[in-house]
Image (cartoon, rainbow, N blue to C red):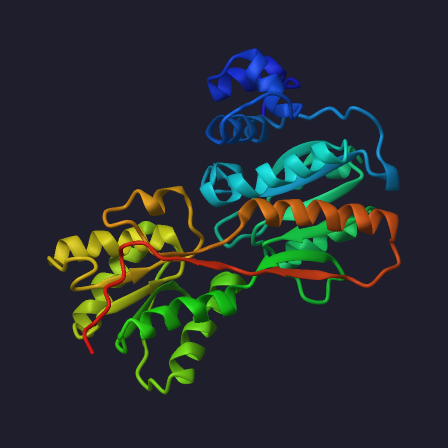
Length: 342
């Protein structure tokens, strides 16, 4: 964060665009490419730029705070997946003439918050969206410090009473593994999950196991590894060393899948002929891999848009029960899955 209030000129400079282009994006005007729009939104988020409303809104909401996580020096808003979530939040706020204020919570090595952002403590916002996976205790802490609506985006806090928008990870993973099975694979590995990892990834692990059981495949091949490219590479190397008979791998996200590609190259196994790979999320680089990655698409912008709608409805109907919306995934078949001969 800057010590002084960031300006539109700061956003334009950070995004590498003209002042007029930055203004058009942040005011939802003009014909601007998706790539440019993403760069401007990410720049505004990283600077903590406040998008000004054109008029006041109904339901007591004027300014929405968006809270991400700052881990290992890298803010959530630089993450490719969440940059689209933030763009969806921004687009929906423009539709409802709401301002957006971005902030990151710095967490320690075990994911505990170091401090809460001033916008919460100083009552600078009328509602809060918590984006991404936080410890449940952190979410409850934020909820205890505020007296305005809170909603979770790709986050979990059972019993909190907060509205949430999540991906249907279990059924998405089931569909991914079933796609491999229908292509003739029965020796399928899982890489990129940890038992104490994010709830979303644990759901993908359940979906993997459920698909195997549904198709009466008794043998599973699971290598616990971090949800990173390096983790995917190291996990795949270990898994294939232990079980070289594996013909396909379900990677818990596309970054992990890229690590699977790295490992296959090191081992001299050709994708997809000698190792089929399917990912999850459909982030930008997945189609640029060689071969292009088959994956499960998550509508990341829709996650953000629905979260704003939940928050707005909560402000207008504070006594209604908590809602949790699950967004389905879509299979995107490309070139990384080989159909085995019957």
